Every structure is written in structure tokens, then in C-alpha cells.
Length: 112
Image 1 (cartoon, rainbow, N blue to C red):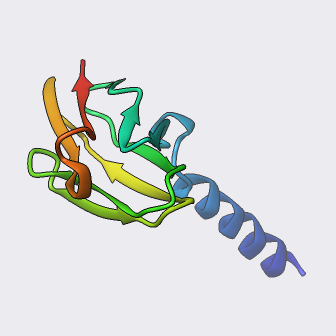
Image 2: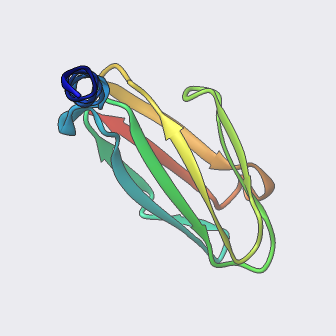
């Protein structure tokens, strides 16, 4: 019985030690595609941290979140949502576009 308690205690300690710290979770941001434009056009994220950007496409047609600077290409189907994970980023400005409507769908991630 003592061995079972010891193993259970060690297992619980290992789970606690292997769990990510609360500060290690990616911060979340939201973008909306509406009328072939990103809203907001700029998002400010913490430099040096990984972030999750949830993109909601309210248009009926698909759009691609595309950024060479961020090394991301993600197609978001019409009337759907997608997740883009980026970072950690150095401080700076990182442009992105909607590849299918590059003339209107433009934005930037600003890491500070």
C-alpha cells in the first residue's frame, strides 16, 4: 500500500512540474475579415511571446491570412474561423495581407 501511495505522489508531482506555467500560455488576439478587410488593421502583441490569433471570416468567400514576415499562410473559409499561431517575435512591425484581396485586406502585427 505504501508503494502505491508513493507512486501516486510521484506521479502527481511529475504532472505538476510538467504542466506549463500560467505565464507560458499563448496570449490570444482576434481579427475579423469583413468586406475583404481586416478589423482591426493592427494588433499589438508582446515581443518575445508566442501568441494565438483567432481570425473570423464574416465574408461569404474565403480569404488567406498571408505574411512572409511572420512565415504564415492560412486559408480561412467563408463564414468560418481559423487559428494562426505566431511568435515569439522580436520587437517590430510585421505586415500581413489577405492574399485573395490584397488590395483591401492589409494589416500588421506590432510586437512591442
